[in-house]
Image 1 (cartoon, one colour):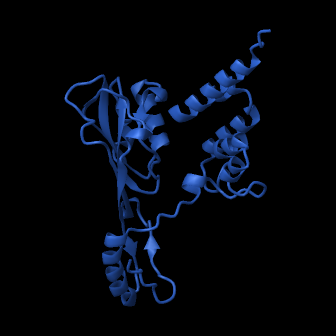
Image 2: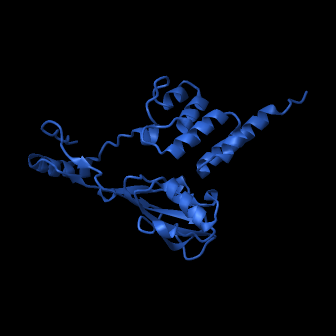
Image 3: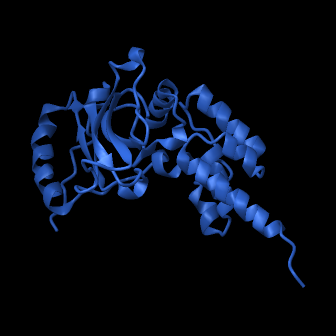
Length: 243
């Protein structure tokens, strides 16, 4: 394997100056979208909005519960993204948001969209204000990346933020404490998060262990399923053991 050559010093550039500088296109199985089916499939294109906030506005405008809307993945707020959502009922975007959120029905499916149906994502990044002396090295390295691939480093988007006591949320899981791991992921706010999201996480933190109430404050279908399963598990352990 031919190694990618390092740049001379630090690579200087500007990233994500506009949402269009980071473009994401979701990829679904080629045979998923049909001419008929129980669920309608929509292409959701958005700029400057994260997926859940966009779905909340769409569900409110369409008078549909957000839990009735399926999606295969969350897309970045600081980007111009294209993804797919499913619902058994018609969906529409509020008029005041049509410039930044577009929704088009493109077909049907026999199943609701979920993360298992996300084949992958196609990315396009724009780097601005590069130093001219670095351009040739970048072009040469692109050829090597095409052949050898690129190491994908995950940060807070996947592993949540660094915690002063527990460090990363995944570490308690490796020590056998799955509940603390889950609690950190669902209740620990990160810098830059909207006040509404921080307030909701604080409520979940205070309600932790009361799974019925936590379920009511769920923001996504995944969260709702998690708290629903925890509620069932708690009831199962409360049942008396027959003698």
